[in-house]
Image 1: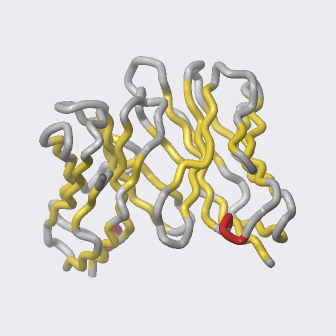
Image 2: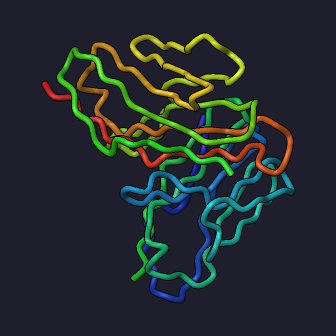
Length: 112
Length: 118
């Protein structure tokens, strides 16, 4: 059982480049999330999707876009990467709002 | 908007002793869940314990227990008989259960780095 799978695990981008972080879960969960983790800042919510076809902004959405392609997949896109977006990105999913959230292994992104 | 505050950036404890991590939150909602997650150096996020706001009884999971004070909006985590494997970042988290704009918005505090010393 794979759980939540994020790709890639590591990425280096140049300022201004674009990329998409992929996330897929095989647990038939309704809710999916994207977070960024920076030292001393905890996990900050970028976007979340309560169900297929819906997305909502979190605390730090600027510079990012998301797509809930289907129930399994929730992608995060950086259209024009900036050094301030250097971070570790986590995808998570949850069956119901009271349940445990399952996290991917994280993507370490460096923007130079 | 909901906020979660962890006021202790770092803590340390001797092996086999007890430690309490603090968490306060702010919300106008009355139906929510609170969680403690652990993140060891492997970066994997692991659920430690959770508490439903409507339950007055404090949750316990083996060596882990919480002190949930709803009126004070406080949700502390107590780790008894600390073990070296408890060394990790600990995050307090909140999720709103009420239907509406923020339902399902899972938010985290900044974390407490716990070191268990032999």
